[in-house]
Image 1 (cartoon, rainbow, N blue to C red):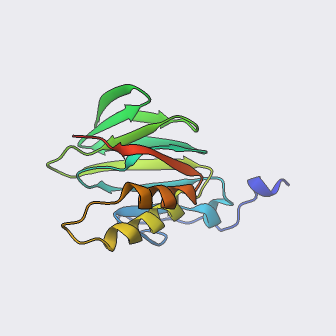
Image 2: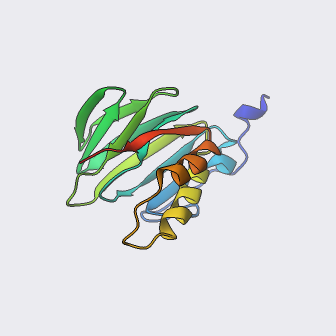
Length: 158
């Protein structure tokens, strides 16, 4: 059997609010080790704001469960609301932001896995900043570059 299709863990069930391991504001439902590197699936709260404009070498999905998210796909800016979906295909510039004031709940999927490692490293960097500091785009670019991604510009102005 092809190693990419090999399941490396036993089937499991997670109860509401359970996670495979901590992942910032997200519940990590499936990660690389669990899926044999095939995918990462997470659910959670998107705080106000969002990541810088970026591009990945992998596919990403965003499904809004509750709230409103502003999405930029290439030159197209749109609003996603509860039930709306975005396919963020590999090689295409994108970003998104929660315009506030409330929290947004969303489900995310990355194919293949690995985005969880980007989230871990980015989360540690953001946690190291004081409330008065804003993330440095150059530092963010260094983080993204180590995870099959590139920063192309600042976050959305919301």
